[in-house]
Length: 507
Image (cartoon, rainbow, N blue to C red; front, side, top):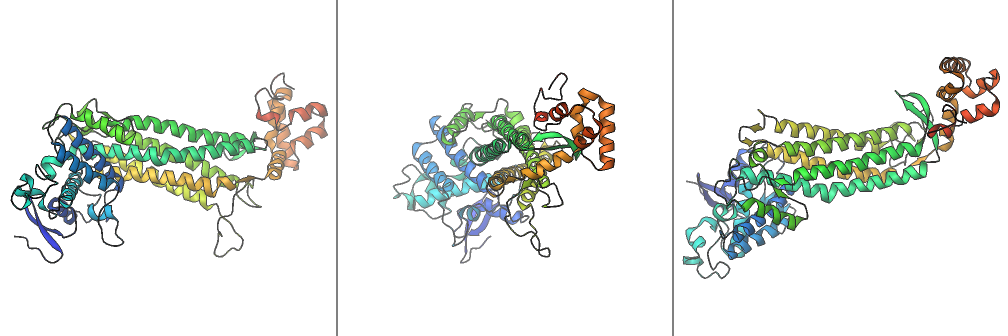
């Protein structure tokens, strides 16, 4: 038999008694999980707990609307859920209230059962606190009946709240945890990531307009190519971010389909047929996201394809950010012995040994964060693989997948803000350097091809390179074309538009 001491109380579950920290709002099932899974020291993300609070409140309303739960218990559960969602929970000084009362490691039972029971227990015990009953009374028969020493409590005219029978009514961990995954990811994408993408896209569009007059040399295969406007390059970056918004919109549609209502294996055992639809509608009302009940509960619970799809969208955004950040740091390389076409804001000293050195640290940080997002996507994908996570009638890698997804959303959102605030807003072009490099480029001969042919243009470029001259200088020396015609063909600005002077019949 378990024994309490000055710091613990005794709670019971179906496996027997368990000492639980006196002030903790969770119960025996949670404490068993805390002892079973001391793996990473990282609790399930707070966003999942917040999503669970919304789900449990929606479930209580649905059960009440269907006539399965009385109004008093519905209201008590809803009030407890509100306290969790608002983080209004007692905790020791300096402790995070969510981490304190929801301490179970991410690497736990793969269905998230431990976290579901953690939430059920905390909600039930919050109702105890509201009813001035001792924490841990939620399974006391007298408390649940509102009799004996609990008969005087006016807040429970029809009895207390049981973690399983009332908070978990019509539910299973197997449908509520994947629902929490979808809800948390969708809410965080809408709250944090989409606004961050819009900010960075807007700043890139501003730079595209500012840089449009700046003509520079293009590069393919890291070799000189025909001229391009710096604004055109930044317009391409901005388009990547606008496409990212569109990809997230499609991911939100996938995440909007919720498994709730399928209970244990998708059959809906022990719940009302209308339950899932009512919960989804209530979540939509509460959170402003268009959620809907899964069309096929067996697909929704047995596989995690929608989650993989959404993670893939995040991976694509990470790839886009690496392209943008890396191109900016390449164009800003130097300041004297690199490309030097962009002037990056100096945000910190770059070297402990080389005085005056300034590095593209913002670009590097964004690229590293993007690498982590790509790795998180690999974890999500692996977690959803058949034979790894998706096994027969349930996925058993969901807590890990949820943490990876939410980490990616946070990393991308914060990276976008850092990129915008600490780099893009202070970015400048070195127009003089851009013009110098264009004139030195042998690729300028490309616009001569329609006038003098490919072979002759190639010979001109090779000789110019050998003699250390520009294409313009050598072409004038050789009298390849009249000076006026040559000037028109070698106009860098004309080379950046369709129908330019070098096109057949142009100029």
